[in-house]
Length: 239
Picture 1 (cartoon, rainbow, N blue to C red):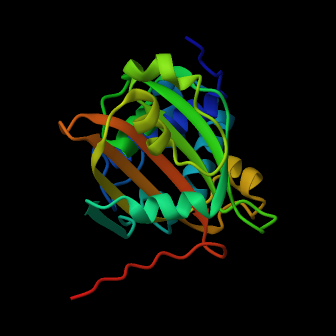
Picture 2: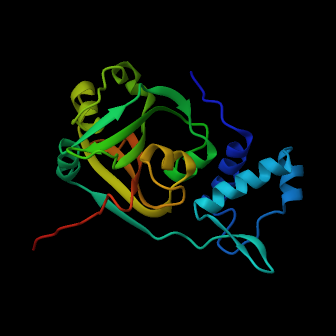
């Protein structure tokens, strides 16, 4: 198993972010002081300040005069279930998805809170960049997670125009029966901004999807961040 080392401020930001997303700290609640965080986590004040700067850039915390640093208001989110994956297939066919090899990892607290899974749960992690055909700049950076039971077919997953879930269906002989997705308004982190070539803190849409097979077992999760200036989401219905 391969684990990527991360700076101490990022680990601290992950822990605080997980507390916020798991509602252990609610909108309006004050954060512990820098001195309290330094003592609690055994880190320097510089590390604490960098972690808080990261969370502020994501819009998760705000500084209020007379109140110190508090948890920001809950972000707008749209949750919906999809029974038809054709729109996702069309999106994949109109764009190119360049992926890195799958790495078996364990969900960090922030990832677990975002994906609504237990922290430390093992998943196959795949990082990818999506570019629409004819475009020069990426339209999304995606972190996909496959169930570990698909490790034997993960090496056969390829970059290109075929969606990961479609490749998984083809290679593992399963059928996706249901997809849930959550759409959130977020600000680009420093890492996302570098990949997407946008300013840190720029407005983005984050789409979190959970893919279930016909037995309702979770087989794939993904988190995609889209620059607000390059992506729009439209739902069309017919009566």
